[in-house]
Length: 150
Ligand SMILES: [Zn+2]
Image 1 (cartoon, rainbow, N blue to C red):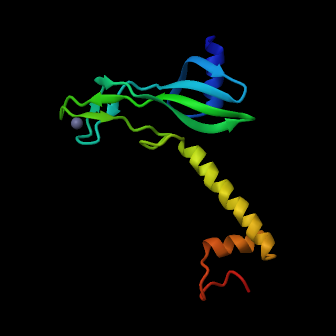
Image 2 (spheres, rainbow, N blue to C red):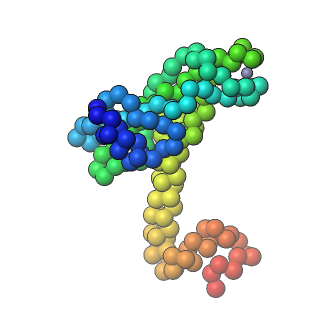
Image 3 (tube, helix red, strand yellow):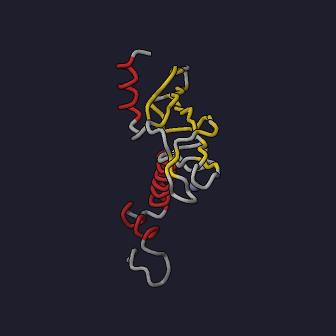
């Protein structure tokens, strides 16, 4: 893929510290982007020393926010480094996905937001509440002491 296209993809993707590498696969309903960390080192969680000593690569797919009608998957590499200070291997922390999760933080946030908003609107309609009142019920308490609804 030409360099300029990669740059555009990196800008669109908008995850700091990663670059889009290799082939981007676009299917009818999905897009797969292979991404890689820009930095070549990670911090050991035990002794907090930097390590550049790559031990193993762990490549897998995670789901990200959709682009238009396409589901987006990121092929990521959570590298395992070997700490040369304490001699233990460790997996790097990634800013955009929790360990052992198969979806990005931002996808999880979006899902939660949409579920809350969707339910909130339904509940507000059912009890004939203003959306702001329904929001108060959820976020400001629901017991006797609540002054959310008068
Ligand atoms: Zn260490």
